[in-house]
Amino acid sequence: GFASDALRSDPDFLRRVVAQNWMAMHEASESVTRTNHALSLCAISENEEAAEALHPGLWNDRTFVVNAVQTNGWTLQYVEDHLLTDHDVIRNAVAPDVLGIH
Image 1: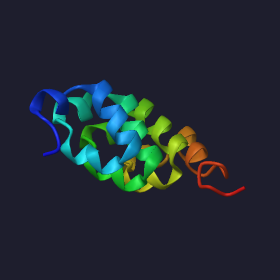
Image 2: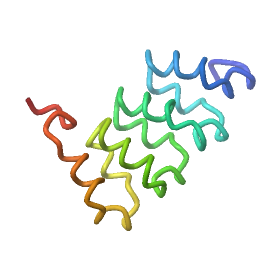
Image 3: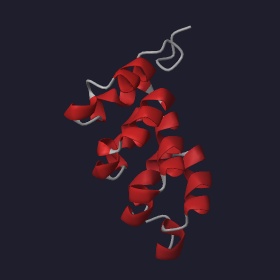
Image 4: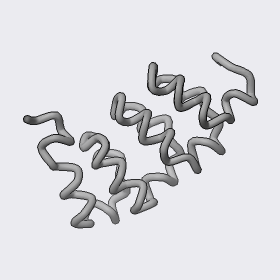
């Protein structure tokens, strides 16, 4: 690991690290990745592959999912099936600026 257990559980420290290298999410404690939406959104704003390091339960949380796909539309592939028919989820995921289309 890149840091002590205490730092791996510190959301502020992790947010600074993840903003520079999203792969640090793989080292974050599960308790932080499960509950800290801001940290998770920071990671996926850097790269949608960071979604693989997030707590799976986040992809069942509608509020998180709407924000996640708005942050990075490519994360739609991680969304649980029952949310794939949600109008807000789909609308936010396919917005041109979310997919990097200008």
